[in-house]
Length: 218
Ligand SMILES: [Cu+2]
Image (cartoon, rainbow, N blue to C red; front, top):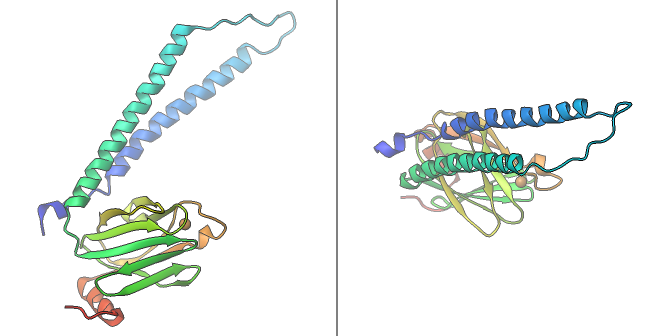
């Protein structure tokens, strides 16, 4: 097992999330307080005429600057986290390739090495079967609209874009049965776009692949 394969990136987005949440909560609090303060302070009262308001360029410029700096900071954190994840994923040597295609409203998981295609969604409920503790290269694409591949167990979610293929390398670190689903609203039967992931031991996966293979395996 190479050093790279041991690096887990599943907490990268966790850390990102815990930076986003306090900032979002802070912005929300500022907005709510500003609205409430204005509504109370400047409410209509007898004997009070409306003020002639004037702009405060300095205040507005400061506000715009603060917003820009906040957004730039978050973009920087987001892109560097994504870069770290993608770098690790690109260096991993996947032992299995699964081509994932989203379509209204089904998942197709094709295993080119075995000639196996599993379909799940409105067409059936064939599971996505994977080996544990082995990097798996998922090639993600869509046949029609944007879908999103989401397996909460992996703490990973990424869009499937029609006309483009994006590759990610993910590793299941424990055996078990996990739910997965489309995480991008893609039409009326979007909720049916679900899949069950079965993560098996290496021997269990090999046995499954052998019994389902449509092509001779070496
Ligand atoms: Cu979908």
